[in-house]
Length: 260
Image 1 (cartoon, rainbow, N blue to C red):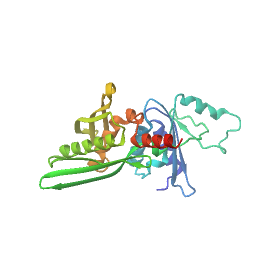
Image 2: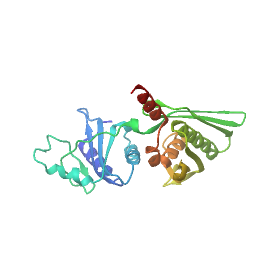
Image 3: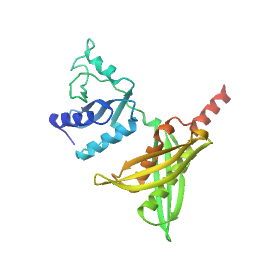
Image 4: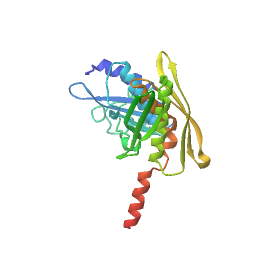
């Protein structure tokens, strides 16, 4: 979908108003299609949540965009990079513009996209219902490594019951990605109404040893309920999961030591 300059400007202003976002820029091709979305934010919120908010914003405007085109530069002091617009040699012709949260129009932005390889993502989800039993298999991936699927089954009841089984399968898949010693258990899952839209909220116990914590995540349902249950579950454990020790990384390190 090609957008005119007025539409692009309005989208940039709305992106810059997302919580914890300091500035935003949309780059388009010669045909007017979106090539990339560059966002500068602080570290108070995870880049994944900011990308999700940006995706929702675009969908509200009827714009279909691949989340991989949305890059977030999470900085300790976003103002520092924005102040670089005053550096000698930085002009409107030499650098794309960023629209800041206070609507000022600085000139700057060389941003690096956050690599997808650093996130745990949904690789596949399969579910069946037979003889009153709902069975689901969730496969997660980390970088190029696709882990062992997590599975769960139980009575095919209401949507909440099936979504709960999806969340449990998701957490089993998470445990299969990690080194031994991590706990990941679903405490509760609910489907709630947020401003007229359904959302899945998941409460999860996650951690290692004494670092076990109770965490909550949520995701608006924009597509499949089961996919949404996966995303809400991952949202709950997003921050500690990013610091966890993954099984394939341990195997790689062991192989490297054996060659040394």
